[in-house]
Image (tube, one colour):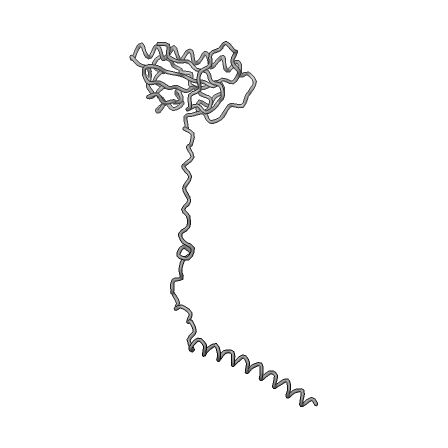
Amino acid sequence: MDWFRYRWQAASLFAALAAVVVAIVATDLATGGHTEAPPPLGTAYPTSEAVAGPRPTRTPRPPTATPHPLTPTVTPTPQPGGGQRDLQRAQDLERIRAALEEYYDKEGSYPSTSGNMQTLCAYQDLDIGCKLTKVLDPLPAADPLGDPLLNGYWYASDGKSFAVYAIQETVPAPNVPQCEKPEAIKRPDRIYCVRSTR
C-alpha cells in the first residue's frame, strides 16, 4: 500500500514538471525562439522629458528691493522725554536752515544732492550736507536719540531749494503745520521738516 502511494506522488511530481517544461517550450515556439535581449551596458535610456515632455519653466521672482542704507529703517521705540527731544530737533533744524541760507549767500546755491535724499552729515566723505560745516561748526547732524543713520537728520536739495527732515516722536498740536513725508523716508510715521524760504 505504501509503495503504491509513493509511486502516485512521484507520478504527480513528474506531471507537474512536465507541464512547466511544456509551457516553456510553447512560449519559445510562439516567439520564434527569440526573446528581447537586455540593452548593452552604457545604453542611454530615454529621459523623463522625452517621455513626459519638457517641464514647465518657473518664472523667477523679481528681486526684492533693499532699503537704501541712508534711509531710516526702524521707528524708534517711544521713550520718556519725547517732547523735549522734539523741541531739540526743531531747534536743530532751525539752526541748519539758517546755515543753509548763509551758505547760499556765500556760494550762490545750496549744497546739491541732485534732489536725492541723504543723511545730513553721517558720512563725512559722502554726505553733501557736511559742506555746511563751513558756516556752522559743529553741525548738529545727530538726533537727540543718537545714531545718525537711524535717527538723524535727512537732507535733499537741487541747489535752488532744500528740505531738511527729522523724526517726530510726539503727536504735534493741531495748529502745527506738518510736512509731507517723502517716499525715501519709509518710517517713522511723523516727521518734522524745514524748507528753503527763497
